[in-house]
Amino acid sequence: MPIKCLIVDELHESIGPLLAGIGVAYDYRPDITREEIKTVLPGYDGLVIRSKTRVDEDLLTTSKLKFVARAGAGIDNLDEKALQQRNIRILNAPEGNRDAVGEHTVGLILNLLHNLTRGHNQIMAGTWEREGNRGRELGSLTVGIYGYGNTGAALAKKLAGFGCRVIAYDILAKQSNSYVEVVDLAAIYEETDVLSLHIPLTAETKALADTSFFQRFAKPLVFINTSRGEIAPLAAIKEALHTGNIYLAGLDVLECEKFSRMNAQQAADLAWLQESGRVLFTPHVAGWTFESYARINAVLADKIAAFLEQGG
Image 1 (cartoon, rainbow, N blue to C red):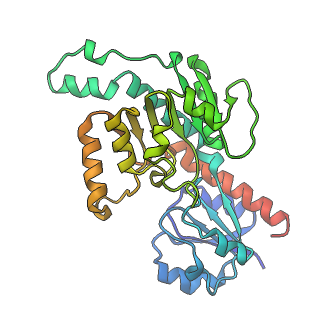
Image 2: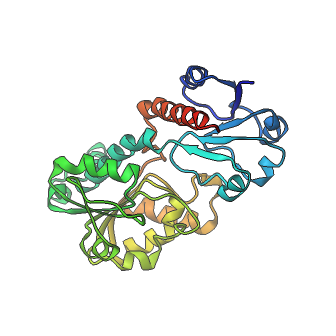
Image 3: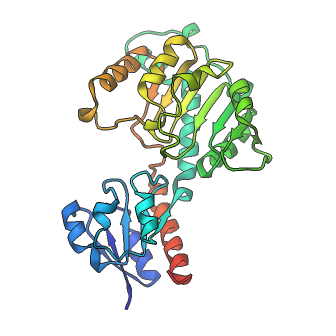
């Protein structure tokens, strides 16, 4: 019997032909509800998701899945323990959007260092201010990359032409190369001017970038987060800006990205950051380009094909 796959999120139109090309039958149901997924899931070998569906014990109770494929890098909406206990393989596609995240991160850094958005807004409001918008050159600074996986490595490569020093720390042993010097945490804390987070959200990394984390840095930071908002709570970023541990921040992610679901403290902290004039926000789009939208599908299809060829 052919492998059957259920797709429960809206994906680039290429997903169908790619799955068909590797012999996988599929049902594309991006509007399906969670209760409907639970009802029909026993008829499928694979599940393809993006962000809307939490895959946990409740969803898996009657399933016979062989794999769950996440169209993106993060797998924080998957209960890894429940999937491992059921011998369900987790497949994701961090290679698909690493270049997009790398480019977006560079864009945030340059925008902040050269006051691009602030200068634009001032001119639109009728103010012509040169001295107050004097910039800093990226080439004179040390960029610290916290997490040297797919997106961290992509960022390091894209920074190569700017002449800046690039250092990186990763919990897993990694090797230095022509783009980056792999260092320990002590060097990250001591030498970093621009800090960019590129780590997954796990129980260990949730709220990792708290107030004490920012206090460890020897120099005031330009802080960039394109990973997950829960890693760097708004309250900690606010405090670090207030004390001078951070002097500029670029945030593509928030700890709660549904404004209506923010608690009172989160809403107040966000309002303070918005009014500070020192934070540049983007709406979780660092990895969300036209190119990555299609590339993620190609990566997933290749990984599903490899898994099936291995007898999955």
